[in-house]
Length: 75
Image (tube, rainbow, N blue to C red):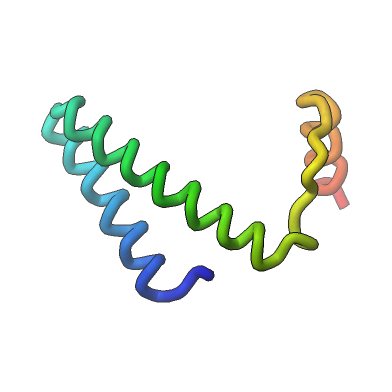
């Protein structure tokens, strides 16, 4: 699950992405971003397998999803 080491690694990855963008180095930015998203995907999959009741597996159409989010935010 998420812990200090995972959070530290995510912050480091964000810093690497930002540095590459600031240095105008799109190839490094792309590689850092791909690596970060790949790692994040694995983290999300682990969380979903550990806590399946926290997630909705069936998907709503986009319009319905936004409507549900907005109606929940208004409460």
